[in-house]
Amino acid sequence: MVDPGERGATGRDGAAGPVDSTGSKGTRRVGASGRFGNMYGPDATFLGVPPADLSDPSTYAGAGAVILGAPYDGGTSHRPGARFGPQAIRTTDYLPHDGRRPHLALGVDPLADLGVVDVGDVEMPGGEIEKSMGRLEEAVLQVASSGSVPVILGGDHTIAWPDVTGVARHVGWGRVSVIHFDAHADTAAIQFGSLIGHGTPMRRLIDSGAARGDRFLQIGLRGYWPDPETLEWMQSQGMRSFEMSEVVSRGLHACLTEAMEMATDDCDGVFLSVDVDVVDPGAAPGTGTPEPGGLSTRQLLDSVRRIAMEIPLAGMDVVEVSPPYDQAEITAYLGNRVVLEALSGLAWRRRVAAGATGPQPSWPMLDPRRGRGPAPDSSQ
Image 1: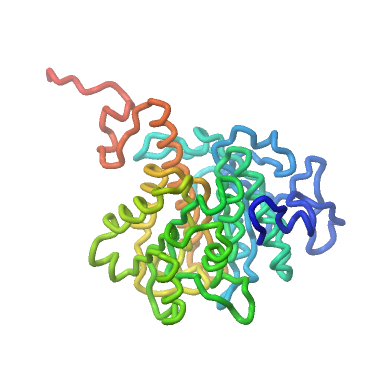
Image 2: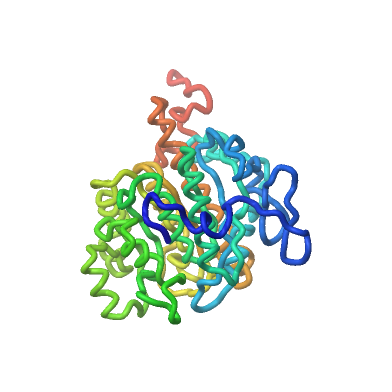
């Protein structure tokens, strides 16, 4: 990746924005606006939010959050297919793609309230991992520098390396903490002879200094990896990893409270990285490295919403949705809802910061305090 203050890989390999193409097989013809669109499939936006053009900052100026696609799965160590994740996350829903999603529990419409836009995919050629990661880093930096929260749709978890790095180059090197939901630690020193892959991004982030090891919080780990040597390295960096046995024993709420307290101590922003394989594969089968015994979908959605409501998010990604291995699109639905819950929490937090009343999720849905109608006549 890059050191702070230096240009990323796109300064060497080409612009982060769209490039001219011939329209032949494997390329996409760029329109007059310069918008690249989506690499795989039609140019759909996240639930119908307005399209924006990464090369034209005026198209996302003032947006509270900006959707970017990172359709890359060249870093997988087992089952591929996550390159199709961004399109699935954007489009999998049974409601109209009208750019509106009123939230029943929080009383916000995150897409409308935040003015969410979608700049399409970053062009990430599958056989060129360094170029792809460099382009993504520059795109994330560009969005973060505009004042918007970048929301990156993966793609395999390799993309967390450029995602967090891009945010750190804006917020401050080593000033971004990471809350990481995953079945796996992704802290390997090397993967199949390479420093870059979906098993190594968290190590690359800590080694580079973009993120501090003692402000790196992992929730949902389980299974039979990492090996003792890798665990020893994680301990030496001060990482805090909540394995599922601890989550079950203490309760997810308590573990999440501890993680958020650490994440907001002596850091200026929090990056949220969600690998869908943190959820039990019985509820999220469409992923590359399934591991039984994970969180429920309800636990993950509640946790993501709570994080966005309570602490300052500087960026987030949702990764490892692999549609070829999905069943009835349930993993794609989960990825879509993870994004919506985070955006809803972010919209609620900004509403409260502006002095408005923020309904609590625990209130009854038709409670008059939500402001949906007149209070009942107490005299009757």
